[in-house]
Image (cartoon, rainbow, N blue to C red; front, side, top):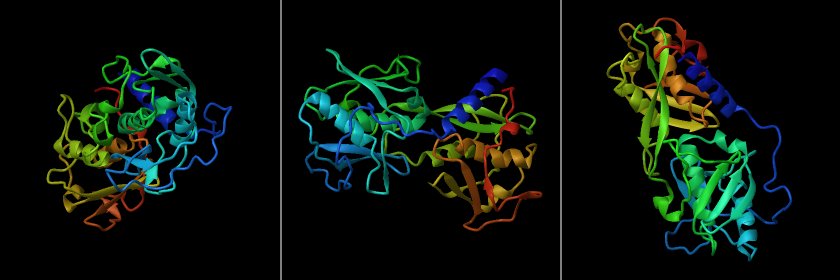
Length: 319
């Protein structure tokens, strides 16, 4: 179990690293005028489109786009470049982030295979599902591109069951999202109440669900379903509001969150929330408020009016 926790930490740290160099898609071509211009406001508007992710990472949004290339091979390159370009609309983000790029695109009788560099593996959970939906729905608008398969580091992209995802098409993503399940990691208290233990929970994501931050906190409030774990959040706690901006997650609880949990240390209560939210690639720090106002201390004497970062020292190696 210690080795599993160590790997969890290493994967998390690797996911958080900022890549030093901006790698150009395919490295040998530059598409002029590849810019996502405006957010689509009409369901009846005709394409083609480039699909982007909203900043809250809850859905994908189609944006009108006019390509300049004609052949399917060149159109694939152009659309991938557009998917790697930051939208002008600040409420949206591109599907392919910095450092992630396609090393080669191969056509076969089965469909189009995209070979991504290993940086694609930094996309996880809901973020990866939305990014893949954007890419596939964008490319499947091209005549001759009906199905798309993903490879990462030369290996087929695997799903939650460990099996290759294989070829997908636009119909596999309904209303701009995917119907597949994703895992979230939530930290509860151990039996002694002095450490945190991770629990991997499967969540169905359909693009219309509540923000993933709310889902995570809801799991904490409900408590664990596995043995050898204790609920870490005080009874009666209600989430009033949650939002994420610039890597900071703002969490507003009711006053019940300040109550003590019998047999659980205060720092375990606090960091069960912080560590769980920090599992998301979009979150680096957490700030708490109670009924909309900041509080100087939490329970006994823990400073509570600043920003909280992930605490690895509290994570137990024994589940």
